[in-house]
Amino acid sequence: MPNLPTVALVGSDSLLAREVRDIVATTEADLDLRLVAAVDEESGALTRMGDEPTVVNLLNAESLLDARAVILAGNAQSSRQALDLLGDPPDAAVIDLTYSAEERPDARLRAPLVESVQVEDPADVAVHVIAHPAAIALALFMRRLHANDPIRSAVIQIFAPASEHGAPGVHELQQQTVSLLSFKNLPKDVFDTQLSFNLLARYGDEAPVSLEESELRIERHLASLLALPGDGEGALELLLDKKEDFDAVVLDVMLPGKDGFTVASELRAARHFVPVLMLTARGRPEDILKLSPETITGHAN
Image (tube, rainbow, N blue to C red; front, side, top):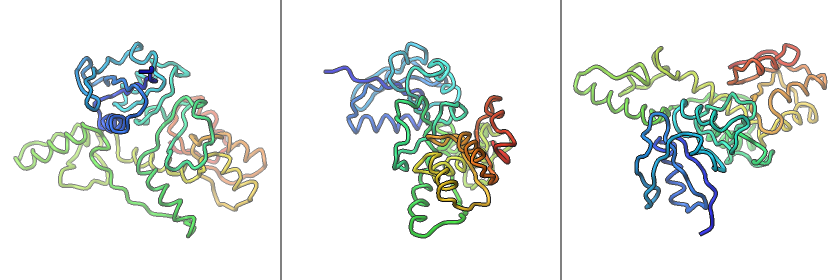
């Protein structure tokens, strides 16, 4: 049997990782999937991949050493640790399902279902951040609708499931349901409010991840995907070559190809002074310095 390329799956027991494991097991993919424990998971545990037994590895440099690609599917802490172990630039291609690498300058937002044109060779991209599933679904629908009946504006209501927060979110929902029915105090570590038998417009103030943060992420990702075929060149073509008239331009920093910084700079170099609002999850000083008043009108994190 030939040696297969190794892909490390960090956070091997999360809900996201279980989906990846199921896909690999049922499609007979030509790769060796190495399971790596997240910070909150037990390493050395015996589990299975399809019908084959396998052992979950400890997250360290050795478990990532010879991997061709590393999939981040665990909690934020394990994703950051894996990125640190891989170095800068990383020693392997990184596929980030957790959004932990969004702030990296070498990260590119990806949505293969939406990308009709491959702007960059995947081998030239260090970190692939997979777009939020809601943004991907909306982009597919809105792009097809826009082709037949142009959309000028849209109001979208998204219902996020408890599983958005992985196994801890699902577990807290289950525990809240049991507690309510037995008149006990509610666990609130994830949502900091009652989610069971409820629809929430926001989480409690002490929730580790706010609902507003998820909303802004979906908006950023959707803005990038609606600019596809997926590149800054497409935005420049609309504004400079086709001379489309817009009152303002919203740019995502993580556009594939030419990123948002480059698009904004080339607009100003061409003396096109349409107001530009930059959407970014990046908070690094070197990225903030790029957002000069001469280039953009404002930015939103």
